[in-house]
Image (cartoon, rainbow, N blue to C red):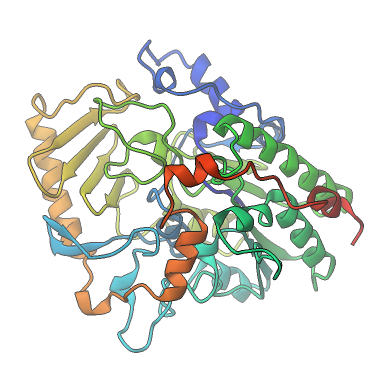
Length: 432
């Protein structure tokens, strides 16, 4: 399973081709508002041999939330039980699973009380390996539950000052590939599950690249890994799954509401639409809406150990519990409700994928259905404030290394252009 942090679906050229050839997209398609898609021949070669899921959707616009959903099959939430107030929680650290934590016993962002995808596979006899380059997934957050080996890429040499720029240099796809290949060379069995999480696309602005350039560079390095795995015979009889944790806001405009990066509030579709490519094809309908929390069950079925649908939600609905908004989708209709103030938005995503037309004044019937369900979910998914842990100093440091704290526009403008650490690409292809 390959997770490409912050990869928008419309910047995978196989998806862009699907959108441009679709007869049911009018002139006001989502693509109109978006920048030129990248060229991704290596992702496309997976798509050509497999299955493209056209309606894959993230559980949340933050890594911690979406990956906790993927691993547990549950819906992340920061609900307090009140429509107007979320938990006092930083969404970049919260996994959205605090309702399952036991005060005094669970100190991980993913509580130990929850079963995970890796535990499913390990219990079925798979050797499980996780290689991650996003600091928010590092121990002791709890994402490593069930992994026989969990490797964290991005530690800085002692002679370098640790900041988001220096850390970015040593967590590139070249570094990740090198760690993956070294670990696989020591694998105890060919019956294994590999989860690899890249962060190059997330770091596009740190390297002063365009988003498109960052996607294309990542795709090149992904191709190097796939070539090496194929040469070593590790893709024979294997299933490869490529997806993302969430997307990114670029030049998009939705009702003239300005949102930046992947911070949401509210979460428009460029943040939520993610690629999901499975090679070889599965028995799952590629036109079905597949959410992050559905991936656990999908992988279980592929691995022959079974797996049911995601819990908490019906198969055709999505609920995103944000700090300032409540976001609900049922079928083709999506609504966004401000926690404070009267702002309500309703979109028909089939007719208006670019989210240009607010139907809130025209479809009171749909809004009433959505509001009733949101109220039900906000109670069902609520945490008691006593279950919520404060941010630790370590959590704050991780946020800082990813640029979420204490970063200003002047830091990016005044900092020298950074490049990958010397020889990382050469090391990635050296024999183990």
